[in-house]
Image (cartoon, rainbow, N blue to C red; front, side, top):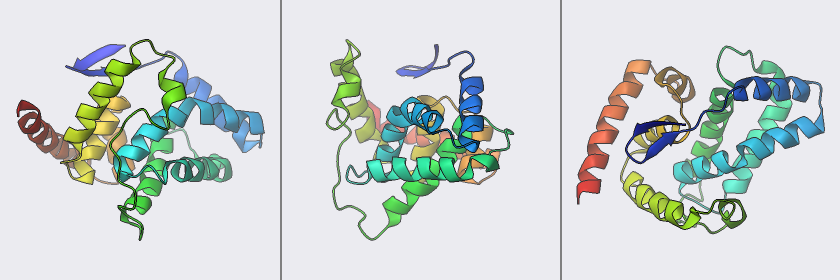
Length: 193
C-alpha cells in the first residue's frame, strides 16, 4: 500500500490487472465462474463508488448488476489499452449517472454507513473507525459537484491515474487536473470547519 495523501491509501496488488484480464478473457468464453469471481473482486468497490455517485441506497445493487451484465455481454469489446478497472469503472460511472439523473433521483437519500455492507466490513478489526472516517468523508464529498466527486473517488479510493479518469469521464486529462484542484480546495475549506 502507498499513502498518497493524509487519510487516503492507494491499494495496489501485484498482478491484479493480469488476474482481471484473465477473468475477462474467460468471460468472453462465457465461463460463469469467471464472472462470479470478477463480481466478488469488484462488489465492495462498486458498492461504495455507486453510492457516492448516486447518493441513493435503493439502486446500488441494480447499478452493480447492470455493470456486470455489460461486462458479460461486452467483454469482447475490452481491448486491453487500459486497466480492467478503468474499463469497469467507466461502465459503472455511466450506469450510476443514469440513476442519479433518473426520475427517482433523491427517493432514498442516504449517508454512507455500514448498513447493507456490514458483512464485508466486519472482516476488518478496525471497521468502526473506518465507517466513521467514511461518514466524515461522505459528508464532505456531498458538497462537491458530481464531476469533482468522481475525480476524488477514482483517484483516492480506487488508485486511478488522471489519464484513466479522463477516459471514464470522457474529458481531457487537463480537465481532470482542474477538477481535482477545485475539489481539493473545496474539501479543504469544508474539513477545516
